[in-house]
Image (cartoon, rainbow, N blue to C red; front, top):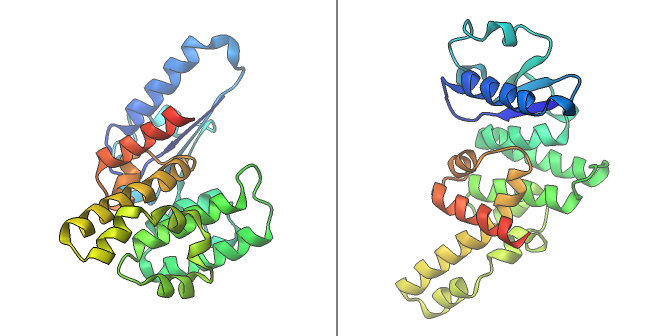
Length: 224
């Protein structure tokens, strides 16, 4: 049995909650496992809970491992799934180079069960939000891809945005912005959820409202 937690926010109660939930599940499903293992992923040690004494029996066990994304070594040698999480915490200067290299790597390597185009969609979506002040052409030059060919830009061409631009009316522009964000989230949220990020973590990293992300996640569940 394998348990995993991806934690992008400071939470001093994390260990208590995570181990309590994991052990409760094990107790209720005793016939479904003969061993168990836990992994907790943090962007850096600074986000891990300060109290390590209370749960030292677990934290010092070979059944529990804490992983810090900023201490994993060379970006190019890590699994693609880990690379995607690293992109969300990288600075703009580092992220630009890492995103370009990761796209090149995805195009050349086997990506397992997750289609290459979906991984590239995740990368370009993170880049679009990280570099929201850049034009499409500038982002394309930075990543070495044509964004019009990715789902994130195809879905973003909402009718409201086009009407707002053509009519030049403030109401139309605002409606277009909201619809564009909704379409972006429609594509982005399901993909980022696959990386293990929570609704709150996605909202924080994309700088959008938590409720908007939650609604998008619910719509995806209803349509699946």
